[in-house]
Length: 503
Image 1: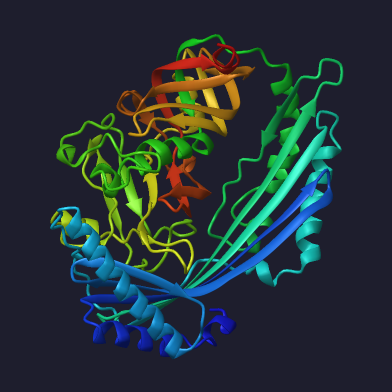
Image 2: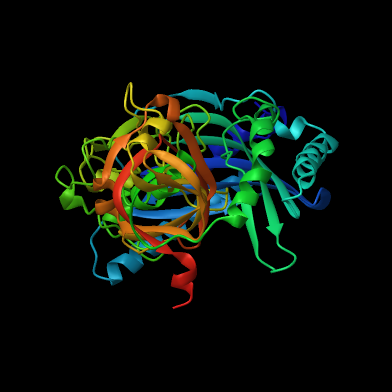
Protein backbone atom coordinates (compact mmCIF):
# COMPACT_ATOMS: atom_id res chain seq x y z
CA UNK A 1 0.00 0.00 0.00
CA UNK A 2 1.27 3.47 -0.91
CA UNK A 3 2.67 5.09 2.23
CA UNK A 4 2.08 8.64 1.00
CA UNK A 5 -1.63 7.87 0.64
CA UNK A 6 -1.79 6.30 4.10
CA UNK A 7 -0.17 9.45 5.50
CA UNK A 8 -3.26 11.50 4.55
CA UNK A 9 -5.70 12.20 7.43
CA UNK A 10 -8.08 9.47 6.29
CA UNK A 11 -9.86 8.56 9.53
CA UNK A 12 -10.14 12.10 10.97
CA UNK A 13 -11.77 13.32 7.76
CA UNK A 14 -14.15 10.35 7.57
CA UNK A 15 -15.09 10.60 11.25
CA UNK A 16 -15.87 14.30 10.93
CA UNK A 17 -17.96 13.87 7.79
CA UNK A 18 -19.96 10.90 9.07
CA UNK A 19 -20.56 12.50 12.48
CA UNK A 20 -21.90 15.66 10.80
CA UNK A 21 -24.17 13.65 8.49
CA UNK A 22 -25.58 11.71 11.47
CA UNK A 23 -26.15 14.89 13.44
CA UNK A 24 -28.13 16.32 10.51
CA UNK A 25 -30.40 13.28 10.42
CA UNK A 26 -28.95 11.21 7.57
CA UNK A 27 -30.23 7.61 7.46
CA UNK A 28 -27.03 6.54 5.71
CA UNK A 29 -23.74 8.26 4.93
CA UNK A 30 -20.50 7.17 3.32
CA UNK A 31 -17.17 8.91 2.88
CA UNK A 32 -14.74 8.14 0.05
CA UNK A 33 -11.28 9.68 -0.27
CA UNK A 34 -9.36 8.89 -3.44
CA UNK A 35 -6.06 9.61 -5.11
CA UNK A 36 -5.92 8.56 -8.75
CA UNK A 37 -2.67 8.89 -10.69
CA UNK A 38 -2.88 8.38 -14.45
CA UNK A 39 0.06 8.62 -16.86
CA UNK A 40 0.60 8.15 -20.60
CA UNK A 41 3.79 7.79 -22.60
CA UNK A 42 3.47 8.14 -26.40
CA UNK A 43 6.09 7.56 -29.12
CA UNK A 44 5.69 8.06 -32.87
CA UNK A 45 8.18 6.25 -35.08
CA UNK A 46 10.37 5.60 -32.07
CA UNK A 47 10.56 9.23 -30.96
CA UNK A 48 8.83 10.73 -27.88
CA UNK A 49 5.58 12.44 -28.89
CA UNK A 50 4.11 13.31 -25.52
CA UNK A 51 3.90 12.42 -21.85
CA UNK A 52 1.05 13.11 -19.46
CA UNK A 53 1.06 12.47 -15.71
CA UNK A 54 -1.87 13.71 -13.62
CA UNK A 55 -3.07 13.11 -10.06
CA UNK A 56 -6.62 13.69 -8.81
CA UNK A 57 -7.02 13.80 -5.02
CA UNK A 58 -10.15 14.63 -3.06
CA UNK A 59 -13.14 13.15 -1.28
CA UNK A 60 -16.87 12.77 -1.64
CA UNK A 61 -19.66 12.38 0.91
CA UNK A 62 -22.89 10.66 -0.07
CA UNK A 63 -25.99 10.52 2.12
CA UNK A 64 -29.53 9.19 2.16
CA UNK A 65 -31.68 11.74 3.97
CA UNK A 66 -35.47 11.80 3.97
CA UNK A 67 -35.53 9.10 1.29
CA UNK A 68 -33.40 11.07 -1.18
CA UNK A 69 -29.78 11.02 -2.30
CA UNK A 70 -27.38 13.83 -1.54
CA UNK A 71 -23.76 14.13 -2.63
CA UNK A 72 -20.99 16.71 -2.33
CA UNK A 73 -17.24 16.68 -2.86
CA UNK A 74 -14.27 18.59 -1.49
CA UNK A 75 -10.49 18.88 -1.40
CA UNK A 76 -9.85 20.63 1.93
CA UNK A 77 -7.98 18.05 4.01
CA UNK A 78 -9.27 19.17 7.42
CA UNK A 79 -12.03 17.75 9.66
CA UNK A 80 -13.90 21.07 9.48
CA UNK A 81 -13.74 20.96 5.67
CA UNK A 82 -15.05 17.38 5.59
CA UNK A 83 -17.90 18.29 7.95
CA UNK A 84 -18.90 21.19 5.69
CA UNK A 85 -18.99 18.86 2.68
CA UNK A 86 -21.22 16.45 4.61
CA UNK A 87 -23.60 19.32 5.41
CA UNK A 88 -23.67 20.23 1.71
CA UNK A 89 -24.58 16.62 0.86
CA UNK A 90 -27.49 16.71 3.31
CA UNK A 91 -28.66 20.04 1.89
CA UNK A 92 -28.56 18.50 -1.58
CA UNK A 93 -30.68 15.57 -0.38
CA UNK A 94 -33.27 17.96 1.05
CA UNK A 95 -33.41 19.88 -2.22
CA UNK A 96 -33.74 16.62 -4.19
CA UNK A 97 -36.64 15.55 -1.99
CA UNK A 98 -38.49 18.78 -2.82
CA UNK A 99 -37.91 18.34 -6.54
CA UNK A 100 -39.09 14.72 -6.44
CA UNK A 101 -42.21 15.65 -4.45
CA UNK A 102 -42.99 18.48 -6.88
CA UNK A 103 -42.81 15.97 -9.72
CA UNK A 104 -45.48 13.87 -8.00
CA UNK A 105 -43.26 10.93 -7.14
CA UNK A 106 -43.27 9.13 -3.80
CA UNK A 107 -40.24 6.93 -4.57
CA UNK A 108 -37.77 6.72 -1.70
CA UNK A 109 -34.16 5.60 -1.80
CA UNK A 110 -33.57 2.40 0.13
CA UNK A 111 -30.37 0.35 0.17
CA UNK A 112 -30.11 -3.42 0.17
CA UNK A 113 -28.53 -4.61 3.43
CA UNK A 114 -24.83 -5.38 3.63
CA UNK A 115 -22.89 -6.61 6.67
CA UNK A 116 -20.39 -4.36 8.37
CA UNK A 117 -16.87 -5.61 7.64
CA UNK A 118 -14.97 -3.46 10.12
CA UNK A 119 -11.52 -2.38 8.94
CA UNK A 120 -10.25 -4.08 5.77
CA UNK A 121 -7.43 -3.53 3.26
CA UNK A 122 -6.95 -4.90 -0.25
CA UNK A 123 -4.24 -4.54 -2.92
CA UNK A 124 -4.54 -5.76 -6.51
CA UNK A 125 -2.28 -8.52 -7.86
CA UNK A 126 0.90 -6.98 -9.29
CA UNK A 127 4.64 -7.29 -8.75
CA UNK A 128 6.24 -3.99 -9.81
CA UNK A 129 4.46 -0.64 -9.61
CA UNK A 130 5.02 1.06 -12.99
CA UNK A 131 5.30 4.42 -11.23
CA UNK A 132 8.42 3.12 -9.47
CA UNK A 133 10.11 2.44 -12.83
CA UNK A 134 12.40 5.20 -14.22
CA UNK A 135 11.00 7.27 -17.09
CA UNK A 136 13.94 6.28 -19.28
CA UNK A 137 13.04 2.61 -18.93
CA UNK A 138 9.48 3.23 -20.07
CA UNK A 139 10.32 5.30 -23.12
CA UNK A 140 13.28 3.02 -23.83
CA UNK A 141 11.06 -0.05 -23.96
CA UNK A 142 8.57 1.65 -26.28
CA UNK A 143 11.42 2.83 -28.51
CA UNK A 144 12.86 -0.68 -28.69
CA UNK A 145 9.50 -2.17 -29.63
CA UNK A 146 8.93 0.55 -32.23
CA UNK A 147 12.38 -0.06 -33.72
CA UNK A 148 11.70 -3.75 -34.17
CA UNK A 149 8.58 -3.00 -36.20
CA UNK A 150 10.12 -0.13 -38.20
CA UNK A 151 13.00 -2.40 -39.24
CA UNK A 152 10.56 -4.38 -41.40
CA UNK A 153 9.98 -3.29 -44.99
CA UNK A 154 6.22 -3.69 -44.59
CA UNK A 155 5.95 -1.09 -41.79
CA UNK A 156 5.95 2.64 -42.58
CA UNK A 157 4.96 4.16 -39.23
CA UNK A 158 4.55 2.99 -35.64
CA UNK A 159 2.61 4.54 -32.77
CA UNK A 160 3.53 3.18 -29.32
CA UNK A 161 1.66 3.98 -26.15
CA UNK A 162 1.79 2.97 -22.51
CA UNK A 163 -0.98 3.94 -20.09
CA UNK A 164 -0.62 3.31 -16.35
CA UNK A 165 -3.04 4.03 -13.50
CA UNK A 166 -2.65 3.79 -9.73
CA UNK A 167 -5.92 4.10 -7.84
CA UNK A 168 -5.93 4.51 -4.05
CA UNK A 169 -9.27 4.57 -2.27
CA UNK A 170 -10.35 4.93 1.37
CA UNK A 171 -13.99 4.30 2.26
CA UNK A 172 -15.96 4.53 5.50
CA UNK A 173 -19.70 4.43 6.21
CA UNK A 174 -22.13 4.81 9.09
CA UNK A 175 -22.57 1.02 9.27
CA UNK A 176 -18.95 0.61 10.36
CA UNK A 177 -17.22 -0.65 7.22
CA UNK A 178 -13.81 0.94 6.62
CA UNK A 179 -11.74 -0.11 3.60
CA UNK A 180 -8.37 0.97 2.24
CA UNK A 181 -7.56 -0.29 -1.26
CA UNK A 182 -5.01 0.08 -4.05
CA UNK A 183 -5.25 -0.95 -7.69
CA UNK A 184 -2.66 -0.88 -10.47
CA UNK A 185 -3.51 -1.27 -14.15
CA UNK A 186 -1.47 -1.09 -17.34
CA UNK A 187 -2.37 -0.73 -21.03
CA UNK A 188 0.49 -1.14 -23.56
CA UNK A 189 -0.35 -0.75 -27.25
CA UNK A 190 1.48 -0.53 -30.57
CA UNK A 191 -0.08 0.26 -33.94
CA UNK A 192 1.88 -0.39 -37.15
CA UNK A 193 0.89 1.37 -40.38
CA UNK A 194 1.74 0.26 -43.91
CA UNK A 195 1.52 2.69 -46.84
CA UNK A 196 1.78 1.79 -50.53
CA UNK A 197 3.62 4.81 -51.94
CA UNK A 198 2.43 4.13 -55.48
CA UNK A 199 -1.31 3.78 -54.85
CA UNK A 200 -1.61 5.65 -51.56
CA UNK A 201 -3.42 2.65 -50.05
CA UNK A 202 -2.70 2.17 -46.35
CA UNK A 203 -3.77 -0.10 -43.51
CA UNK A 204 -2.97 -0.63 -39.85
CA UNK A 205 -2.49 -3.47 -37.42
CA UNK A 206 -2.57 -3.20 -33.65
CA UNK A 207 -1.12 -5.48 -30.99
CA UNK A 208 -3.55 -7.91 -29.40
CA UNK A 209 -2.22 -7.68 -25.84
CA UNK A 210 -5.13 -6.58 -23.64
CA UNK A 211 -4.94 -4.00 -20.86
CA UNK A 212 -4.62 -5.74 -17.52
CA UNK A 213 -4.64 -5.28 -13.78
CA UNK A 214 -0.89 -5.95 -13.69
CA UNK A 215 2.30 -4.04 -13.03
CA UNK A 216 5.51 -3.39 -14.97
CA UNK A 217 6.17 -7.13 -15.14
CA UNK A 218 3.42 -7.30 -17.79
CA UNK A 219 5.65 -5.59 -20.36
CA UNK A 220 8.81 -7.46 -19.40
CA UNK A 221 7.56 -11.00 -19.91
CA UNK A 222 4.83 -12.00 -17.44
CA UNK A 223 1.39 -12.49 -18.94
CA UNK A 224 2.14 -11.84 -22.64
CA UNK A 225 4.70 -12.93 -25.23
CA UNK A 226 5.68 -9.53 -26.64
CA UNK A 227 8.64 -10.85 -28.61
CA UNK A 228 6.44 -13.30 -30.52
CA UNK A 229 3.72 -10.76 -31.29
CA UNK A 230 6.12 -8.08 -32.51
CA UNK A 231 7.99 -10.59 -34.66
CA UNK A 232 4.87 -11.70 -36.56
CA UNK A 233 3.15 -8.32 -37.00
CA UNK A 234 5.06 -7.05 -40.08
CA UNK A 235 4.35 -10.19 -42.11
CA UNK A 236 0.70 -10.15 -41.06
CA UNK A 237 0.38 -6.48 -42.00
CA UNK A 238 1.94 -7.07 -45.41
CA UNK A 239 -0.50 -9.91 -46.04
CA UNK A 240 -3.39 -7.71 -44.94
CA UNK A 241 -2.36 -5.03 -47.45
CA UNK A 242 -2.43 -7.59 -50.26
CA UNK A 243 -5.63 -9.34 -49.12
CA UNK A 244 -8.81 -9.27 -51.22
CA UNK A 245 -11.94 -7.51 -50.03
CA UNK A 246 -14.59 -9.80 -48.55
CA UNK A 247 -17.67 -10.82 -50.52
CA UNK A 248 -20.78 -10.03 -48.44
CA UNK A 249 -22.96 -12.92 -47.41
CA UNK A 250 -23.42 -15.47 -44.66
CA UNK A 251 -20.38 -17.16 -43.19
CA UNK A 252 -19.56 -19.36 -40.25
CA UNK A 253 -17.29 -17.46 -37.86
CA UNK A 254 -14.61 -18.54 -35.45
CA UNK A 255 -14.04 -15.51 -33.25
CA UNK A 256 -10.87 -15.08 -31.24
CA UNK A 257 -11.05 -13.75 -27.65
CA UNK A 258 -9.19 -10.62 -28.81
CA UNK A 259 -12.32 -9.69 -30.77
CA UNK A 260 -15.14 -11.40 -28.89
CA UNK A 261 -14.47 -9.57 -25.61
CA UNK A 262 -15.83 -6.33 -27.10
CA UNK A 263 -19.00 -8.01 -28.39
CA UNK A 264 -19.52 -9.38 -24.88
CA UNK A 265 -19.01 -5.91 -23.43
CA UNK A 266 -21.56 -4.21 -25.65
CA UNK A 267 -24.24 -6.90 -26.09
CA UNK A 268 -24.09 -8.63 -22.68
CA UNK A 269 -22.16 -6.41 -20.26
CA UNK A 270 -24.22 -3.27 -20.79
CA UNK A 271 -27.46 -5.13 -21.47
CA UNK A 272 -27.39 -6.89 -18.08
CA UNK A 273 -26.87 -3.72 -16.02
CA UNK A 274 -30.10 -3.67 -14.04
CA UNK A 275 -30.40 0.12 -13.97
CA UNK A 276 -30.48 0.04 -17.79
CA UNK A 277 -32.99 -2.82 -17.84
CA UNK A 278 -35.27 -0.83 -15.52
CA UNK A 279 -34.96 2.38 -17.54
CA UNK A 280 -32.98 4.32 -14.92
CA UNK A 281 -30.00 4.64 -17.28
CA UNK A 282 -31.54 5.92 -20.49
CA UNK A 283 -29.84 9.16 -21.49
CA UNK A 284 -26.36 7.79 -22.25
CA UNK A 285 -26.50 5.01 -24.87
CA UNK A 286 -29.94 3.83 -23.92
CA UNK A 287 -31.65 1.15 -21.88
CA UNK A 288 -31.69 -2.62 -22.52
CA UNK A 289 -33.75 -5.18 -24.39
CA UNK A 290 -33.14 -7.62 -21.49
CA UNK A 291 -35.92 -6.18 -19.35
CA UNK A 292 -36.64 -7.40 -15.83
CA UNK A 293 -39.77 -9.33 -16.81
CA UNK A 294 -37.52 -11.62 -18.91
CA UNK A 295 -35.37 -12.74 -15.97
CA UNK A 296 -35.30 -16.52 -15.90
CA UNK A 297 -37.01 -16.92 -19.28
CA UNK A 298 -35.11 -14.98 -21.96
CA UNK A 299 -33.23 -17.27 -24.36
CA UNK A 300 -30.14 -15.05 -24.60
CA UNK A 301 -28.17 -17.59 -26.61
CA UNK A 302 -27.50 -21.25 -27.22
CA UNK A 303 -27.10 -23.86 -24.48
CA UNK A 304 -23.30 -23.57 -24.58
CA UNK A 305 -23.55 -19.95 -23.41
CA UNK A 306 -22.58 -19.43 -19.76
CA UNK A 307 -21.68 -15.90 -18.67
CA UNK A 308 -20.63 -14.68 -15.24
CA UNK A 309 -20.31 -11.31 -13.56
CA UNK A 310 -17.12 -11.21 -11.53
CA UNK A 311 -15.45 -8.54 -9.40
CA UNK A 312 -12.81 -10.90 -7.98
CA UNK A 313 -10.84 -12.46 -10.87
CA UNK A 314 -7.07 -11.98 -10.64
CA UNK A 315 -5.78 -9.16 -12.89
CA UNK A 316 -9.30 -8.09 -13.86
CA UNK A 317 -9.69 -4.37 -14.57
CA UNK A 318 -12.96 -4.21 -12.59
CA UNK A 319 -11.58 -6.38 -9.79
CA UNK A 320 -11.63 -4.85 -6.31
CA UNK A 321 -12.04 -6.10 -2.74
CA UNK A 322 -15.00 -3.86 -1.82
CA UNK A 323 -17.05 -1.60 -4.05
CA UNK A 324 -17.85 2.08 -3.51
CA UNK A 325 -20.80 1.19 -1.25
CA UNK A 326 -18.83 -1.07 1.08
CA UNK A 327 -20.08 -4.27 -0.56
CA UNK A 328 -17.70 -7.23 -0.55
CA UNK A 329 -17.21 -8.25 -4.17
CA UNK A 330 -18.28 -11.59 -5.57
CA UNK A 331 -18.95 -13.78 -8.63
CA UNK A 332 -22.41 -14.69 -9.95
CA UNK A 333 -24.24 -16.02 -13.02
CA UNK A 334 -25.72 -13.70 -15.62
CA UNK A 335 -26.52 -16.26 -18.33
CA UNK A 336 -26.77 -19.98 -17.57
CA UNK A 337 -27.16 -22.58 -20.33
CA UNK A 338 -28.26 -19.75 -22.63
CA UNK A 339 -30.93 -18.28 -20.29
CA UNK A 340 -30.81 -14.86 -18.60
CA UNK A 341 -30.56 -15.58 -14.86
CA UNK A 342 -28.98 -12.48 -13.31
CA UNK A 343 -28.10 -8.82 -13.49
CA UNK A 344 -25.40 -6.44 -12.29
CA UNK A 345 -26.62 -4.08 -9.55
CA UNK A 346 -25.76 -1.72 -6.74
CA UNK A 347 -27.46 -1.50 -3.35
CA UNK A 348 -30.23 0.88 -4.35
CA UNK A 349 -31.26 -1.03 -7.47
CA UNK A 350 -31.03 -4.36 -5.61
CA UNK A 351 -33.42 -3.10 -2.91
CA UNK A 352 -35.76 -1.64 -5.53
CA UNK A 353 -36.38 -5.10 -7.02
CA UNK A 354 -36.34 -7.08 -3.77
CA UNK A 355 -32.89 -8.72 -3.99
CA UNK A 356 -31.26 -9.70 -0.70
CA UNK A 357 -28.06 -7.81 -1.46
CA UNK A 358 -26.07 -6.00 -4.12
CA UNK A 359 -23.43 -7.87 -6.11
CA UNK A 360 -20.89 -5.09 -5.62
CA UNK A 361 -21.22 -3.01 -8.79
CA UNK A 362 -20.96 0.56 -7.45
CA UNK A 363 -18.02 2.64 -8.70
CA UNK A 364 -17.07 6.29 -9.17
CA UNK A 365 -14.23 7.26 -11.49
CA UNK A 366 -13.06 10.22 -9.39
CA UNK A 367 -13.49 11.61 -5.87
CA UNK A 368 -15.70 14.38 -7.22
CA UNK A 369 -18.18 12.01 -8.86
CA UNK A 370 -21.03 10.12 -7.23
CA UNK A 371 -20.83 6.29 -7.38
CA UNK A 372 -22.87 4.66 -10.14
CA UNK A 373 -23.88 1.15 -10.94
CA UNK A 374 -20.97 0.04 -13.15
CA UNK A 375 -19.99 -3.08 -15.02
CA UNK A 376 -18.24 -6.06 -13.44
CA UNK A 377 -15.78 -8.27 -15.31
CA UNK A 378 -18.38 -9.99 -17.52
CA UNK A 379 -17.00 -13.19 -19.02
CA UNK A 380 -18.08 -16.05 -21.29
CA UNK A 381 -16.99 -19.31 -19.74
CA UNK A 382 -14.99 -21.94 -21.68
CA UNK A 383 -16.10 -25.56 -22.03
CA UNK A 384 -14.23 -27.92 -19.67
CA UNK A 385 -12.17 -30.17 -21.92
CA UNK A 386 -13.38 -28.13 -24.90
CA UNK A 387 -11.73 -27.81 -28.31
CA UNK A 388 -8.73 -25.72 -29.32
CA UNK A 389 -9.09 -22.81 -31.72
CA UNK A 390 -7.61 -25.01 -34.46
CA UNK A 391 -10.23 -27.67 -33.78
CA UNK A 392 -13.02 -25.09 -34.01
CA UNK A 393 -11.63 -23.91 -37.36
CA UNK A 394 -11.40 -27.50 -38.60
CA UNK A 395 -15.20 -27.79 -38.32
CA UNK A 396 -15.84 -24.93 -40.78
CA UNK A 397 -16.12 -25.45 -44.54
CA UNK A 398 -16.61 -21.81 -45.53
CA UNK A 399 -16.01 -19.14 -42.97
CA UNK A 400 -13.87 -16.41 -41.43
CA UNK A 401 -11.57 -16.39 -38.42
CA UNK A 402 -11.84 -12.97 -36.72
CA UNK A 403 -8.93 -11.61 -34.63
CA UNK A 404 -8.55 -8.31 -32.76
CA UNK A 405 -11.12 -5.59 -32.05
CA UNK A 406 -11.98 -2.72 -34.33
CA UNK A 407 -14.91 -0.35 -34.74
CA UNK A 408 -18.41 -1.16 -33.56
CA UNK A 409 -21.98 0.10 -33.57
CA UNK A 410 -24.94 -0.99 -31.44
CA UNK A 411 -28.41 0.40 -30.89
CA UNK A 412 -29.59 2.00 -27.66
CA UNK A 413 -31.20 -1.19 -26.37
CA UNK A 414 -28.07 -3.27 -26.99
CA UNK A 415 -29.82 -5.40 -29.58
CA UNK A 416 -28.86 -4.63 -33.21
CA UNK A 417 -25.10 -4.45 -33.71
CA UNK A 418 -22.16 -4.46 -36.09
CA UNK A 419 -18.49 -5.19 -35.29
CA UNK A 420 -15.27 -5.13 -37.26
CA UNK A 421 -11.80 -6.36 -36.23
CA UNK A 422 -8.04 -6.18 -36.81
CA UNK A 423 -7.36 -9.33 -38.84
CA UNK A 424 -9.62 -11.63 -40.83
CA UNK A 425 -8.62 -15.03 -42.22
CA UNK A 426 -10.61 -16.95 -44.79
CA UNK A 427 -11.48 -20.51 -43.73
CA UNK A 428 -11.83 -23.10 -46.48
CA UNK A 429 -12.48 -26.77 -45.76
CA UNK A 430 -11.32 -26.47 -42.17
CA UNK A 431 -8.08 -24.57 -42.89
CA UNK A 432 -6.96 -20.96 -42.92
CA UNK A 433 -6.55 -19.75 -46.50
CA UNK A 434 -5.13 -16.21 -46.34
CA UNK A 435 -6.43 -12.89 -45.09
CA UNK A 436 -9.46 -10.83 -46.07
CA UNK A 437 -10.16 -7.11 -45.71
CA UNK A 438 -13.16 -4.87 -45.06
CA UNK A 439 -15.06 -7.39 -42.90
CA UNK A 440 -17.87 -6.56 -40.48
CA UNK A 441 -20.29 -8.98 -38.84
CA UNK A 442 -23.87 -7.92 -38.16
CA UNK A 443 -26.67 -9.49 -36.09
CA UNK A 444 -29.12 -9.01 -33.28
CA UNK A 445 -27.88 -9.99 -29.84
CA UNK A 446 -30.10 -13.04 -29.36
CA UNK A 447 -29.62 -14.28 -32.95
CA UNK A 448 -25.86 -13.95 -32.64
CA UNK A 449 -25.48 -15.73 -29.31
CA UNK A 450 -28.12 -18.26 -30.38
CA UNK A 451 -25.89 -19.12 -33.36
CA UNK A 452 -22.96 -20.00 -31.07
CA UNK A 453 -22.47 -23.72 -31.65
CA UNK A 454 -19.33 -24.33 -29.62
CA UNK A 455 -16.93 -22.62 -27.24
CA UNK A 456 -13.28 -23.47 -26.87
CA UNK A 457 -11.63 -25.05 -23.88
CA UNK A 458 -9.75 -23.27 -21.09
CA UNK A 459 -6.56 -23.28 -23.22
CA UNK A 460 -8.22 -20.73 -25.56
CA UNK A 461 -9.43 -18.43 -22.76
CA UNK A 462 -8.04 -14.86 -22.61
CA UNK A 463 -8.99 -11.99 -20.28
CA UNK A 464 -9.44 -8.98 -22.57
CA UNK A 465 -10.81 -5.58 -21.69
CA UNK A 466 -10.83 -1.81 -21.95
CA UNK A 467 -9.81 1.22 -19.87
CA UNK A 468 -12.59 3.34 -21.36
CA UNK A 469 -16.14 2.17 -20.66
CA UNK A 470 -18.42 5.20 -20.62
CA UNK A 471 -21.67 5.72 -18.75
CA UNK A 472 -23.87 8.38 -17.12
CA UNK A 473 -24.30 12.12 -17.49
CA UNK A 474 -22.01 13.82 -16.54
CA UNK A 475 -19.99 11.05 -18.12
CA UNK A 476 -17.78 8.69 -16.15
CA UNK A 477 -15.32 6.09 -17.43
CA UNK A 478 -14.40 2.75 -15.92
CA UNK A 479 -11.91 0.00 -16.71
CA UNK A 480 -13.39 -3.46 -17.18
CA UNK A 481 -12.21 -6.90 -18.30
CA UNK A 482 -14.02 -9.59 -20.26
CA UNK A 483 -12.69 -13.11 -20.46
CA UNK A 484 -13.73 -15.56 -23.12
CA UNK A 485 -12.58 -18.55 -25.15
CA UNK A 486 -12.55 -18.82 -28.92
CA UNK A 487 -16.07 -19.58 -30.15
CA UNK A 488 -17.79 -20.93 -33.28
CA UNK A 489 -20.86 -19.17 -34.71
CA UNK A 490 -22.91 -20.50 -37.62
CA UNK A 491 -24.30 -18.47 -40.54
CA UNK A 492 -23.59 -14.89 -39.47
CA UNK A 493 -24.27 -11.98 -41.83
CA UNK A 494 -21.03 -10.45 -43.17
CA UNK A 495 -20.90 -6.93 -44.61
CA UNK A 496 -18.20 -5.31 -46.73
CA UNK A 497 -17.32 -2.07 -44.95
CA UNK A 498 -16.18 -0.27 -48.10
CA UNK A 499 -19.49 -1.03 -49.81
CA UNK A 500 -21.45 0.02 -46.73
CA UNK A 501 -19.59 3.33 -46.38
CA UNK A 502 -20.11 4.05 -50.05
CA UNK A 503 -23.88 3.88 -49.89
